[in-house]
Length: 589
Image 1 (cartoon, rainbow, N blue to C red):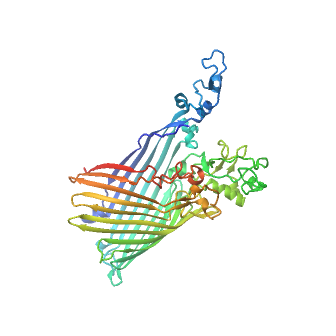
Image 2: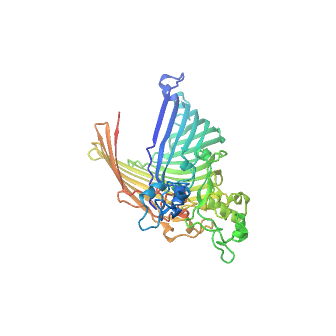
Image 3: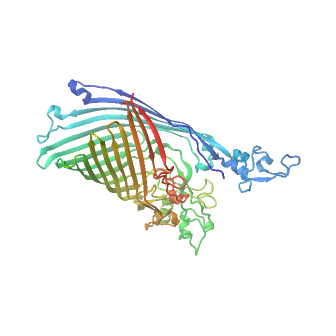
């Protein structure tokens, strides 16, 4: 059928920032740095978005239900007409012949296409205040250090609200390209916080102790929806000489559920990519599962081996928000070294190892994981979430689905190495030449979704999500001339990834198309230039993806792409629009 295009109005972001000053009775020269408070009101509004060229499910159904007009005296007697025209339920229907040699007529296309409208807004209100104490000004410092203790304490109040309004086309699931109904959203929450940070220089400018500093912080948060939470951090920095510095730290971070995760309306949408109990029985087994196992997933005995599988590998899930979510917690350990050799001015290198473990992670378990765990464990926590329709399917209509709303479940652990290097050379005649490099190696990216534990480093797919390249980097070479002209070239690299079903892990392994097995490494090259004129105007221009690299094309089914990609690739990871040219102008007022 004719393609579906999507046209939207612009998205406008309005922000109003109101800085307020509050000063104490400290000495005049210290007042501006000692205490401050402020207010922020951020209003983000999505103007009405118009989705054009969508197909109406109800109209397309009527248009395809064509019969020969046998009404005496009818102007269309003997011609194909919609049944709804004959019975009077929809006299405006135009028959749609999707397989005829003449193609789809403009009148038929105009009838089946319908627009969809939605609009929404996000509001954030922030009030905060803080007090900074600089111990050096009052002699509060270590006897072995040249700098004093620094302390900052304060508090903050935030309120977040979200709303989304949709028309009946979105609400009734009448738009064929949406994969499910889009429901209105409305909700808000607030949080009150108190925080403090301290930095304590212990030793400085001593043999083997050019610097020894410890710092830490603590934050208490009270959420109107998720209760209280505590976050804290600590770090130690040791520089035996000025050229080299070692650092290590621990951080407990907390993320409360956002308004979308809390208040999104629950609705049946596309979710899973498999139904292990769909398909024909071979030697008494369906995809290796017995009738007793499939009965755990809701398959009636008389439907075993008779349930149709979805050829597009798309199955229903009940998705949406959960107002009972708790904050998720992350523990981060880091250790690294920074080099700034005095014999090579302008050069710096840092290498840091990291390990992050996320607990009580907010998100969905995943329909595929739920049904797999039901088959393996017979746990009612999973089996009770599976609701089949009268014929036993999980995809024909909205009656069959797997409950997969947001929950606090499972952990996510990642570890790897981050490296950053830079070199700057300055010349009065040439200008400034800069070279920078930033790279990340992901050794592990382990997801534990309530019994299903697998490592997604170097993989992609419906369960692992976006392609997780084990190595990625950016390298940039730049030149800024004395007369204000800037030139730069950038190299972006993503290492190859494999489809999760090629894994030997039983929780991921499965059938796949050979073209999906591996996404080769991707290289992108960008060029940019800036011109500074009269110390007021800055012109920018450039070309991203200058070699016009096309994105990797994968099967347009749910198994490789899942809900993370779009169509048959991952636009958020790979360049989807080819070579991209841009120009811009900045005016300093």
